[in-house]
Length: 348
Image 1: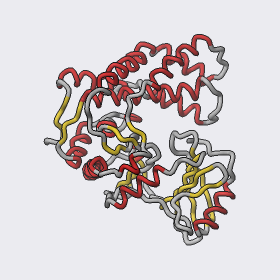
Image 2: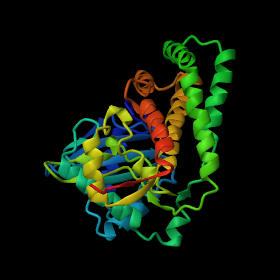
Image 3: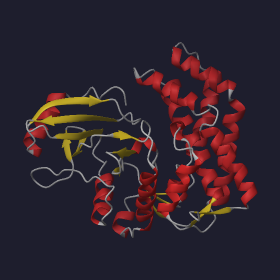
């Protein structure tokens, strides 16, 4: 997010890093990253000039990311960054009503701002295949949400249009969004209706569930130097069909990761696999519906967010740009009709 949490001071975080992590911090800098309204991230620099990535989340229930990164790191997946433990051996620390997690700071760019090389696409494909093949103990699976093809986001989008007709809005961002949504009403309901139709069909199909990141777009892949890459932000993993992650490869989130050669090199690393195109189409439709619901709630039902509001509006509109995620979702649906349901990828 663009604006940091206002309920905890920088000095409290610095004191925690010194006392509980043994890190002699000299400066703490807020980083305007991520879309999570309940999280803030920082760069901490120590006396010895080493740097740390500090994530602060509201609440005391955000430990699943630590459990998953530990599992993956111990499985030998090199593209995972494990958290730094406190002086008393804990991977998370609580400050008042917040959870603090500290990582080594990776000095590089993410996949939104820098293109992956062909080698890096291969590495990403290989790493994601390792993640999808890992055996997740039942004790951990019980802590991870499972795919249910819930209509939650579709229902919220429908409710937003009901609210729009009855609302008296004087917030400029809300007025602009309301106008844009009305202008694109047919497209939005095409997304909602198709996600509903596909979800209904897929939920009754027997499908293997694997561990999925659930949000593995360019913003959650860090690029360090020529080849090293890291998959970050494991806050919301899910047990789901592999297409839950594969939908992002070629999916065009933030208008990147939408070039054919990128898919080619990714699947060289991932290996030959049968991709359920109906599943791919469902997830690409449903992801957009979720974003419409989330941005719509934030911009239409509240006036909070400050500088984030303009960025949220920009991201909302960008989804409908030519060759953006909406166009790609609709094209995937057309591919579904042509393919008959599945496609063999990685056979180049």
